[in-house]
Amino acid sequence: MLTRRHRLLFLAPLFLILIPFLFIPALLGLIASFTNYAPYQKTDLHAVGLANYAHILADPDFRTAIRNSALFTIVTVTLELSIGLLIAVALRRPFRGRSLVRLLLLLPWLISPIANGVMWHFLFNTENGLINFLPAVLGLPRPPSPLNSGLALLAAMSIEIWHQTPLVSFLALPGLLTIPSAQWDQAALEGLSSFAQMRHIVLPRLRLLLLTIGLLLIGNALGTSESISILTGGGPGSETMTPGLYSYRQAFQAYDWTGGATAAWLITATLLIVGVGYLVSVRHLRVPQ
Image (cartoon, rainbow, N blue to C red; front, side, top):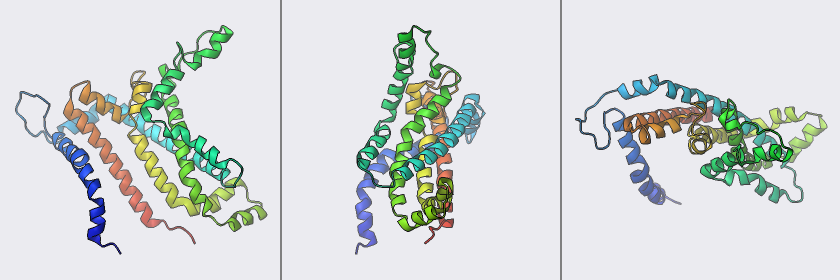
């Protein structure tokens, strides 16, 4: 049996990577967010307290980014969980080629966020993208790209749902397979609808699993920046601006390094709150026997 010292020894390589490349830079960023630090600055370095946080929270662009991120997270996570669970239920019964179908359904999630943004940006391009193909063939006027209109955030949500839903079905299916077939048979004999089966059979037994999947989806949605940066650049205007993209712009485009670090730590604080909420919820949930 492994002792505590042996378990820590196995984790040593992980800590050797995380401490110098994640924890230390993050800690330095946190310290800098309470100062006036800037690379190559000529002014004296001194503490400014919460001034950077007050400045970022008062910025209309950051408030817009928070609103976009909240709406983006609520809509995408809800639909990803719902659609992914329905797909998993549909794949519950064995059929010929099920493994191939599962693999094909997982392909969207395997695409990296940057490649995902590049691909959909090309598809929605009004000059040479597929959105213009059929109208060009029929001799019709080019339709406006949803990425350059009031539909940009909705388009970004749809792409995110397409990208993450396969992961939900992939993770939920093993959990569904642990439910005894007798419960499904009993539900069929009682004439329960699909909605009733989901409510009385699936959700009670998979609530811990779904809660964990939901945590992963929320963390991913709150930190979304790469795909949206390539897809819309945060535009038009600030319609698809996210806190992650705002942090990047502040640090590397506006050269406000402390502003970028402050925004990044506000995102981190939100994720920590979500994580604490998850731990509290887990303590109060028990899988029924």
